[in-house]
Image (cartoon, rainbow, N blue to C red):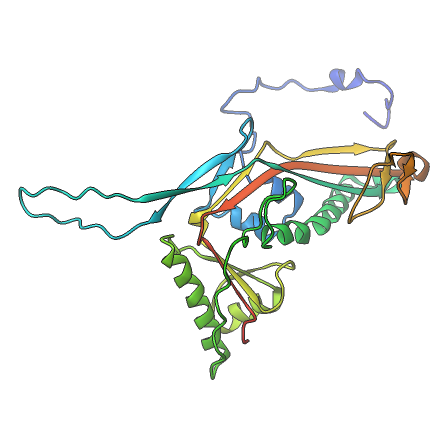
Length: 311
């Protein structure tokens, strides 16, 4: 149709075949996925793999400012057996809360040449997806797994306020030292009253490889985790929220400031032009913009870290 009638907007309606009315049973729409924003932005991100865990809490923040997640601060064991005719104990716990939200904006822009648009659809989607994924994987993980607070622009890193667990002393065998560090991390999570049975370990490529090959410990690799560092997260204490799905826009006419670290307005007060700025129309480029709103939070003690491991 596009080859023979490129300027006929009504041709599509004439060539469209008959279809059955859409219903809730035959819509063919994918199920609602609250971590789709991360999957679309960074398919190899360790953060979205953690948030997608079955035990992690996933929230829809559409139309919601923030959600408080309660958790038990003091969870002493309670007697469950009582004598016949005796009164049963009343458990009294101290409850605390972790706020998920407000959602913060994720915005990624990449530019490709118009020559790429002339390629096959498979090539275009593959190249654009690769460009966006490569530019987002490390950036998202670097934010999710750092120790910085919420500054009103980005959520607090999962390591914010976390006191590092001391590294185990080097043993006779590397596997023993790895096992000691892993056990200490899991024990620290359990000491905070959080179920550590599904603990997810995140480390750099070298450390994750050693954990898998020498100690048989599954670990997710992340380019954003510093060397000699291992992060342990209990999904039962992790919550993430997303405000709708990611929005994808394209433009051929805009002017963009080609700056990755600190982009600015094209022209700011008092008339200063951002440099380098590029006209997409003049350069024959296409800008692809992906926008999503996301937030996350961890219950105190659900995330532990050891730095400077001796292996």
